[in-house]
Length: 224
Image (cartoon, rainbow, N blue to C red; front, side, top):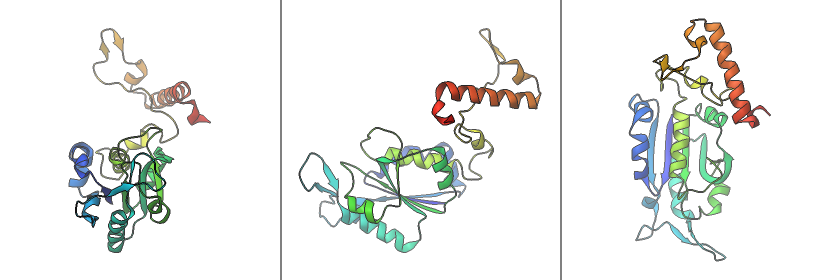
């Protein structure tokens, strides 16, 4: 998979993409992440990419020209399955969306800033708009990092145990059951006996029951 990210703050991705699973995924060649600084496509001598919004009002708007120039260049080089814009008013990111996107070949992600991008970009270039929650961030970079992480971990060969992602919360519309590890007793707090029984069928049933109960109490909306 190839992921191209358009941003005015490429250094914000140094941390998320240079450690742990995302780093190993790139080293294994499972994913190729390319960062593109939108300022490089500005014709302004000061490399400005924003301007006052028509009609007045507080806040600046990202200009159409540098964003369009960057997208056009990338689209001339390859075909993209989705061109995604990270925005608070997009569809809420859910596990099913990440599952679908993990099957794609080429993705482009646009990170907004200020009051957002000139809406003509959204009308004529963007194929999918995604939000990571009902709140506003300073820019789309952190949201894009969340999206990328949720996608990459699903790509075959990224996780050491490929079945791990299949048992995560939300994969079957349920939250994950409780998990335990050694020691079996700590400060008098014991691991449930069934998990120490070695009976795989009983363990599976216990986990299913626990997942259902946890979902009912914490996220009943998932069962609607």
